[in-house]
Length: 146
Image (cartoon, rainbow, N blue to C red; front, side):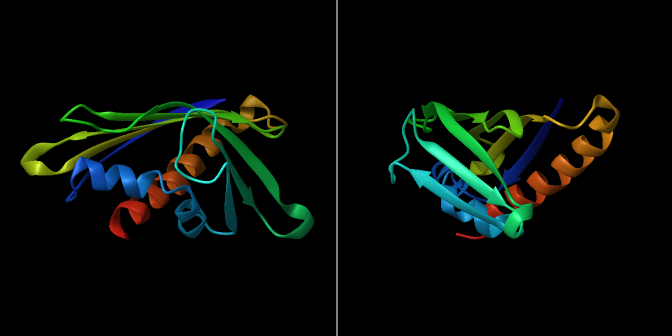
């Protein structure tokens, strides 16, 4: 199990940054070889299931996540979303926080606890580096493109 955090400041309002980061279908465009499904359809609420299927053919796996906290930014208060990973292979959680930053920009913090069940702790360093890389690229891409 690894835990990491990413921080970004984006030239967007907190509402727009939130909208981009929580448009779950767009995560499939931001992570290679990934397709995302959401149930029930938007709008997102506590209990929404987000399934990211990553891979090709028989070498694919599902990262099943349930929204357990859903607090969009409102009246200058930060927004916070927590997804608990419920898959057989991938466990842990992800938290997205969006708050007002300097100069009217949005400040984003993405925290992730990631556990890939068959991997022994010997692989934690590689898992953390790859997770930080993949999720960092995804956050950057989501914030850059509407």
